[in-house]
Image (cartoon, rainbow, N blue to C red; front, top):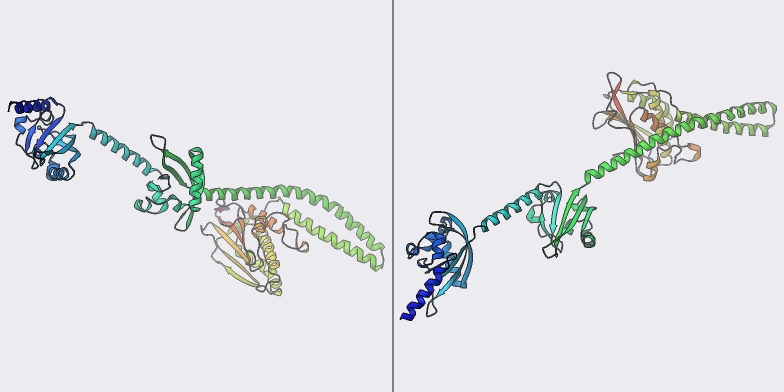
Amino acid sequence: MSSRCSGDMLLSNILDSAIHTAIVVADFDGKILMFNQGAANLFGYTPEEAKDKHLPELTFSKEDQETHLFEQIVERVKNVGWTEETLLRQHKNGHVFPAISTITCLKEAKGHSGGILEITQDVPNLFRLEKELKDSKNFLENILSSSIDAIVTTDPKGHITYANRAFKELIGLRGHQIIGKHISTYYRDGINQARQIMSKLKESGRIRDYEIEITVADKIIPIRTSDTLLYDDYGEVVGTMGVFQDITARKKLSEKLSATQAELIQAVKIRALGDLVTGVAHEINNPLMASDTFLHLLENETGNNPESKKRIKLIKECNLRIQNIVKKLKEFSRQSKFEFTAMDVNDAVLSVLAITRQQLLNQGIEVGLGLNENLPRVLGDKNQIEQVLLNIISNARDAMEGCSQKVLAIQTDLSQKGQQVEILVSDTGIGMTTEEIEQIFNPFFTTKDSDKGIGLGLSISYRIIDAHQGKIKVKSKLNKGTTFIIRLPIYRAGGERNGATQEQGGKNVP
């Protein structure tokens, strides 16, 4: 008997010596059977105050009491034998604090379960650390979510593990529809593109400003991406992160800049060539005049010799052809000021048709007119605009030679922005290739036989429209006809052009 008393006292002394660890014994209903000094220090109740009290009411937070958390813990202990819980516990003074409890099933002498043994330690920094970790995670997610660039992470096999708001907007799907999908789903080149990117990442660990294309709802989007491998604390690859930038607008701007540069080069080239042509035309005219003079003398000396007259006539025709070429060269290189007045483009169209209509009809060409009678005037040189129209109509006539359907359509209207007047001249001729369209305004470029032109008509037309601060463009498909588009700034009071600075020269139709 004394031995048992000594054992109980020893156990009691051991339990009371654990002043920093709360040890509580309770039955399955929560009635406290033992409450050591560590528990007294932790919860604020003396062992005498706690004995026979209900453990959850004494030490659990009110929220956990309301959800009957103690009863759930008891069930887990009965089924498994033990459990470890992170709980909010309550001090006698009402202060709530976090604590970790290890709760095991207490066996009686005969091996039956008689209650629970709870060992609890205060962890005052645990919740603070969890809160800081949660706050840091939320802060990082807010940064990623606020990024205007699309950000996506994948596991080592390429399955998406995170996608920020910009990526979801780019793809047009919700988060749960993206997470878990393979990243190659969105690549235009599919799994091959994913393998290529992963191969580059394995070589250097990161990729910067790499251009790819993704497919979204059958729409191809150009993307510039920077990617990196993600590592864990042990240096093992745990995934990848990619930053996507939609460069559609940048691509369009680059293309527009390239077109503008080509137009500037074209304009500079024509102007430089004009200076050269002026000198060449002058040098040709001098010997040509001498040649005409000697031909006139020879013609008087030959008398009635038919063979000589035939030869002289042939030389005269050659000289006449040279004179016509020189005339065109002079027109091309002319630097004189245009006579600009407020003019109606419809008048210019009708004047040109008055000259060419019969010739067009004789060749079986049907003429269709669609003139907007309410057009504002433009500031232009009527004779020069007529020259442009004559050149285009002449080209259209030649392009339709031999075609079964011959239709020439001329339309006038306001441009979409309402800042310019448009003249559209369309034919049903043989059309042009892409390569021919790119060169059509170059001096001396022609698709005709040598006896039908030397390739200066459209170069001169380009120069004239450029002098009007307008644009001349062409749309054409092989065997499907051609359309020339002339845009001229509208005239406003004071003799100025409206919208002249918005579009300057060019040959590529948007």
